[in-house]
Every structure is written in C-alpha cells, then in structure tokens.
Amino acid sequence: MNLKERIKRLTLIEKIIILNVIIFIIPPLNLFLSLDSQNHNYFEFFTYQFTHGGLLHILFNMFALYSLGPEVFRKLKQNKFLTLYLLGGIFAAITHVVFSQP
Image (cartoon, rainbow, N blue to C red; front, side):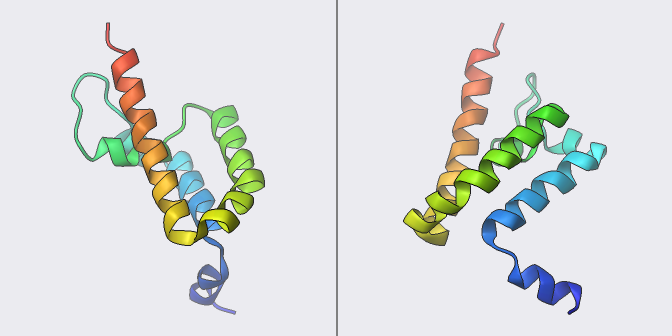
C-alpha cells in the first residue's frame, strides 16, 4: 500500500492528530502559525489550535482528541465535527487574546 492510499484510509481524527504533530515537531512552522500577542493576523485565529506550548501540552491534547474524539465524531458526523474543532480553536484564540492583554 502506498502513502496516498494509507492517508486515504486514516480517519479525520487521525489526520488532525498527524497535522498537529507535524506542526509541533517543525519549530519554524509552529512559530509561524502561533498567535503573536502583539500583532494579530487574522489567519492566526484559524491556525492557533494547531500550535502547542510544549510536549505535555500536545500529548494531553492529542490523547484527549484520540480518546474522546471518536465518540463526538459518531454523534456529529464529519462536517459538524470539523466545524466544532475549528470553531473551538478560534474561540480559544480569541479567549487567549482577550485575557492575555496587559
């Protein structure tokens, strides 16, 4: 089985986890996508959820997504799950901006 076929067989949750891990292990990518507390770019509100502050942070988040995500996915189906995931990240970014202001 080639890589393209393997990727097709992954669930949406597995793809999200892999994307998060790739962004975490490539520091320039993680730094580029993280939320700059001084100069907010609109795209950062969409990419904020793919950045993580440290190893424990990403491990806990990916464990939670892997263990709780499938049940939520079954109830919501793919489009609503992805919408919930993305909106949750946007809300987290907005919350971060609001509460991190000096």
